[in-house]
Image 1 (tube, helix red, strand yellow):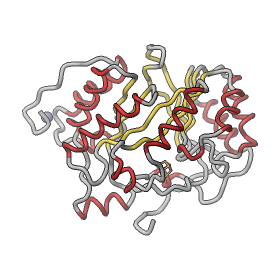
Image 2 (spheres, rainbow, N blue to C red):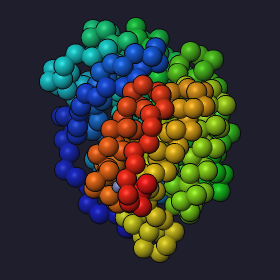
Image 3 (spheres, rainbow, N blue to C red):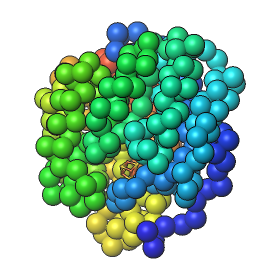
Length: 304
Ligand code: SF4
Ligand SMILES: [Zn+2]
């Protein structure tokens, strides 16, 4: 924490961001999905690579604030059938989203007839609350969980306070209760070489799908939270290349065990060639949307 910079100024009256993007849905259609980045209290975990604290408050937000944030974003966004309510932590963390607000949140989801509602949670917060919230919704609930990596030692070093058993148990609980799970997987977390990073991203996908995850999102690990910058300076972290992201997406798509997405946010920081980067990004985007392999981009550069 002492390596952190300052938080961004945020207001508990509005989400710190909201957007609409296309995504391949569980039914195989390409449809618009709204994503709301809700402003609430910082997550109590202190994962090594996390930078989500940057847009959080120090104190819990008042009851009613979260439904107001959601209503405000929905007024400004075009209507969509699917929504992600991401809160920089765990939806079921009572100090992040007050349980008294669940009904109002569910009412907003039901009034707008959302077919899919995607929230995020650490396994430690997955319990009966998830089932109660599922029962309030007319749409299908999906919960995103950060697996990060299936590498047991690296996972421990990430300070996630979760092991692979905890992850599997949480997925099992949700699965038997008809709640779909998506997993976030880091490409090349600290302490791994490029090759190890790629190998473990593939193993993490295999692990996630083997325990019943339906959708995986592979996120290139980035510096910027202070701690990861320190590790980079020390030689314990190097950002992954776009080429490794391409390789892991290809692997997951050809495996066909579930939906797999490459996270494209800020992707340019992982590229070393301006010439081919836009084509590489578009190829990844097409592979995300169609869940099909597209021929690789050829370029006379180190990313060839
Ligand atoms: S559990 Fe998630 S939000 Fe919380 S610190 Fe870890 S990565 Fe960040
Ligand atoms: Zn190039």
